[in-house]
Image (cartoon, rainbow, N blue to C red):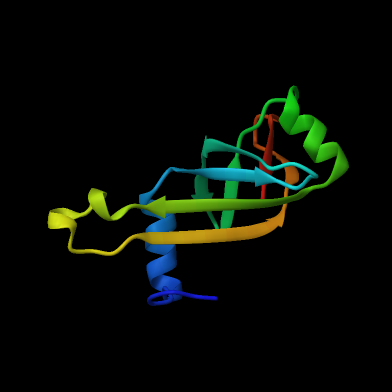
Length: 106
């Protein structure tokens, strides 16, 4: 079900580039989600996760995630713009940067 207006591709790219934080939710029997920063580059959402803790345990069982980015109405001038959000579902994949450090992307 969709509410409001669907973003065009250009609006979505602007929205993803203008924001830096979202909520990363992992698959599993019980809900587990956490706030996390991201970088959007070349049609790829880049996240940086540690190799320890509950996140790692969840990813061992399933690479499926949901990442939600939201700009609430109160962050807009005079509350005139409705809430804007992007919900991205996919699987995390480890990638290495030019220095050989591992990151995860959807």
